[in-house]
Length: 252
Image (tube, rainbow, N blue to C red; front, side, top):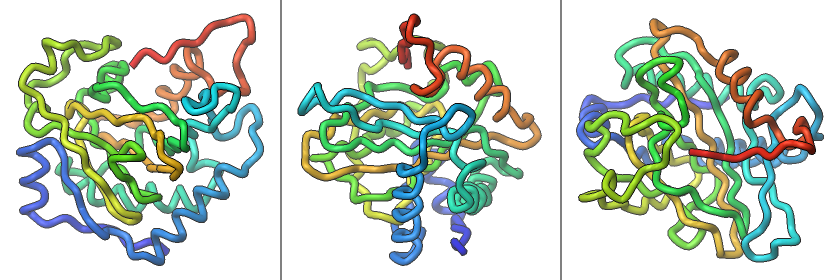
């Protein structure tokens, strides 16, 4: 069973002042190894309609090669990730000031040749339709380095709120921003709020970089998980459930 991380008041203050918080060694080496095993199990599950959502991408190293880029909607189909999402709910609740409820989750695989993510705020992906504030937690599964595309965050700009829904950040938005790389080891956590700008670079190394992300909102703001996934399925379903006659575009 995974331990439940507990935050100090100093850590809570850092989160609200900067928009993010790094917690080193939140899970023990044994727990981190278990999460790695679960991720291997997840990747090995058959793709089937109505199951976990698997997305692929073309390798930047070899465009003929197809890579798993991301798996979403995990916890209903894997007991380990259900336990992980539950273990993270308590420290997020500390940051929210009340009980948290899971909104969404995913594993970003970023295999060798996997692409990066352009600068963005999470809430730009239409999340403001559901409620006004979310907190995400990154769980480091493999060592994340500058070479394989670790998370890069900006301090303080979360206080500016949402720039625009469904539109990427512009050069004007990013004036004065400094994206700082945050390398992590297995078992480390990074908490960040939905307005904190972040990005990551492609993985052109030979080492995989898997990160689990769980996103929560205040329970008092409602449980929106089912509606979120139903809405997303209409516009950006998992690869196995796509209409070959349609073109699907990842916007933000």
